[in-house]
Image (cartoon, rainbow over all chains, first blue to last red; front, top):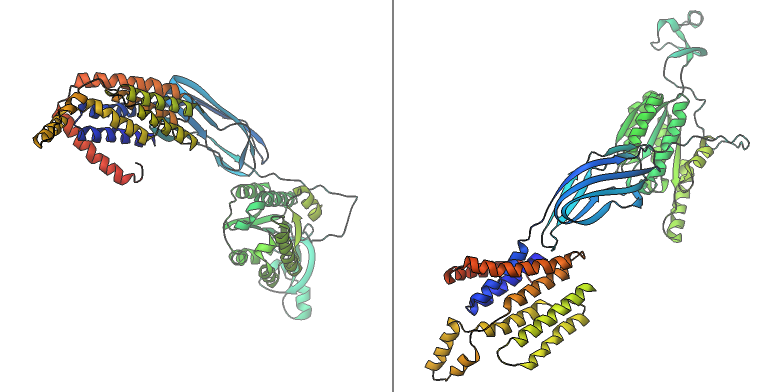
Length: 386
Length: 169
């Protein structure tokens, strides 16, 4: 703006000077041009970048960036941070004048609102001429990377208030695949089983090959369908914490856990143990909203579902995903499952009323269980498996 | 607030300077003081470009005795009009165009400033520009033909600029 003004003045004086053939007026055009020639520069050196250690969502982190500037001009620095970091103390922006050299320290405290891998390496430096004529904007690369895991809530068992379970969580279910144990289950017709399982007495008695079937070792596989479609944006934190907490619960009890993130198209093959839980946490940390239908997700996972015969847990918002087909297809595959509906109230009373009517209609068809996103995850867990 | 006060002062100073250095007394030109007052009421820059243009055009009167001016007087004489009184009215004298330009430039910097540090710096660099202008003028001592060519070039650039920054005038 000012550059334009200065050029405008210079041009005006030149033209007026030419018309009046006045050397004095033409030469006056030099004054604004001299102003435009006033230089500015700034060299910056990053002395130190430090932060306090954080692990989980909700933790507070101290960030300190020490810089040394040499030059002349008005400098504005900004450490670019995502929306999921909320500043609780200090500021990530600073503005100052330098003439010669100056040591600057950017210090602030943030609260981490979302899990994931954070790369806060952009430090924007805006150097302006003190007369506001020219400016340079550049970005410095800082070595600043950290990962935040979702909070995992442990299930608090409420022994004193035992009620009828609303959902059949497969804690006692056994797997349909795996190595056969020693516990006898039944005698069946031969179907290419190993020879050692042939029951010769029963075969002789009936005249056709019979085999002994034993209970399979290990617990049932649990398969999570985590809905990360765009409509889940507002409850994403709750969704991550709930999924992480449930997978921790099942991992602790020796279940195989598989997961498919709907929207992100990310598949995690079923496996057992805390290593698998770590993988789940990592996937959940990277969650971003996308777009994908529940049915296409189910089709994609069908081979694994038919192999492992897992207990399926779908976490979604039924008023948006309407998982009626999903439920029917699961039943067709002979799979048991649970649909968890994350409930969160938004908007006006009228819109909330309409959503509630829709929700009730779908809930009746899909037999879902509501979990309130406005309450603590521990409460939802206690209600589901406590 | 300080920006407005500074620009008001600069505008008033420039107006008084132009009127007081005119060769002939034109007191009614003090009406020009209305321009910054009106701009102030309309919450605009008191020292705006139209005011600067008016002040520059008035100041040109003091530097008018150029070849063009003499040519014009001769032409009028040739056409039968006695225009010798014009030569009495306008003769080479002191002028303050560079000072008005400097004050206008300072006012623009002050008006566009985002930081308080800019205001003293604007005065300092304005003063430096005023001094270096005179120095450059003496040391370069450019020939009129060079100045003329520079002027033609600047005019072309100005027209190009006008077509690009439509509405900036």
